[in-house]
Image 1 (cartoon, rainbow, N blue to C red):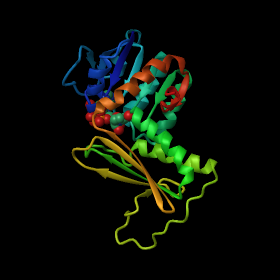
Image 2 (cartoon, helix red, strand yellow):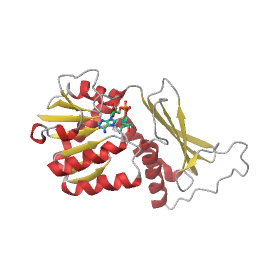
Image 3 (cartoon, protein in one colour):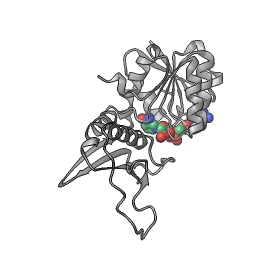
Image 4 (cartoon, protein in one colour):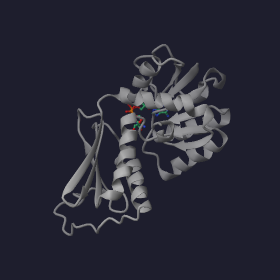
Length: 256
Ligand code: NAD
């Protein structure tokens, strides 16, 4: 039985994970860690800080909180040799480096998207990217998301860029020369792969990868309608963490 401590346990993701991971055989959420008290405990004990949790009482830490606390979770995980699964996005380059450095004495799996459909859509995009002239990404999220662009869109852009570079595909020069409103073409994530961020109430997490070539287009779209879409991927990471030393980015390698 994997006993899980959930950092950010009072948050939107934390509450959904606490409810749904408990339904999966072989795992139980035993600690909810958050600076504020959760609305529902789902049978877990509440802690205001991970340092108050007895390391012997849990097997895995799952962190869906905010970037500062991820670094603290990584240090705690390294000090106690407890595996850590990170879903929190928006880390700075420095924070990401601290997390990776902590992983040298523990096991950390970090992913910008734990939904299986999103992971597969990234794989499909990388497969298609070398065959089209241009690739642009539109990511759409709820209006309380604090970081932009989304971590998923950055990962997708990176995979698309790597696939195009490996195939020797060079994106034609940006055609726009005059901007009536600055920023209308979104942000260049490198090599002409542009990201456009939409924030609207009612959305959860959605992404379209648009690929264009002479006379044709291909759109790969993924929709997370509910936070439960991330549960299966988190469970896969929790089940694999003991056999995965050091730092692992993404859950793609765990999906055949
Ligand atoms: P949220 O604001 O609802 O929840 C965050 C929680 O973290 C809050 O309850 C807050 O009190 C808590 N928190 C803040 N500082 C803390 C600290 N020092 N220690 C412990 N808890 C602390 O946000 P959310 O919608 O649940 O999203 C959380 C994170 O998960 C975000 O970074 C989001 O982008 C990310 N996310 C990732 C995925 C993925 O698949 N990787 C999916 C959805 C959301």
